Image (cartoon, rainbow, N blue to C red; front, side):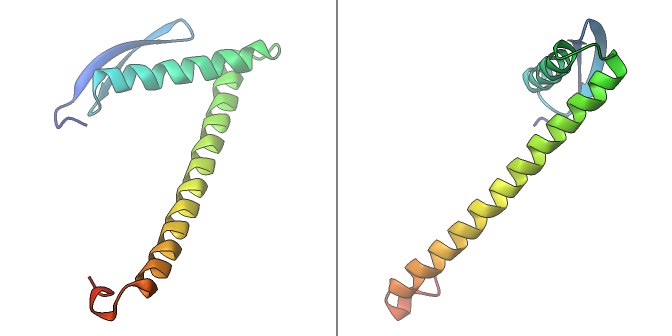
Length: 97
């Protein structure tokens, strides 16, 4: 992430937005494109208005975030456990390093 804010124009479900962000323009465009796809996917599944589709897409994306965080916590726990197991196999002088 850069230290200066940039303004990037993006299109989400046909509406144009100017997004001011610390992120790179490419990252901002990728995030907007992800949201656009998520909203459009919800809208394809039935006659849902744009507002409700945006809420449902936000719920879906939030669920993805929570699942990723749970996965990250699981990997962190697994790595700590593996590290402890490996540490026990090291000679005593190297265990504290």
